[in-house]
Length: 128
Image (cartoon, rainbow, N blue to C red; front, top):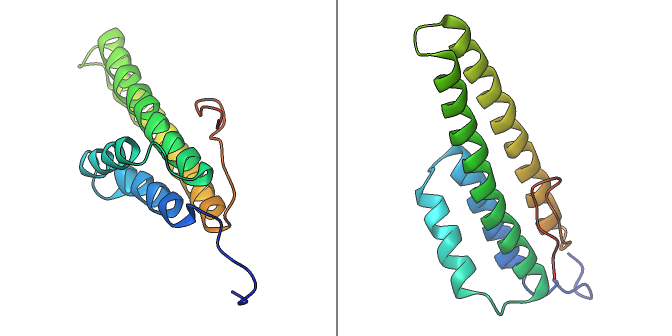
């Protein structure tokens, strides 16, 4: 980075938030979410860029968990545990939603690294 170009305020925290979002999906589910919650609560008065990424990762993690758990449970309840097509639908649904969240998380991380705000499509909240 050239010496004249300064990092936007809150860029480091934005990168951490997006990295934790990906870690929650890929490496340490639950543990990384606890870290996101802690950062979100601790840095409510952070720079707008950091606050935007923290809010996005927090709320999308909540919605993503609901999408994955509730929908898979509903499919299992409606189809029954013994019917093989239930498991096919659950696995396809989980794979599609999970991989979409990972892809959006990579886009969010690239935006954070570029020092730009990012709103996740459909389930993201507008940044204040």
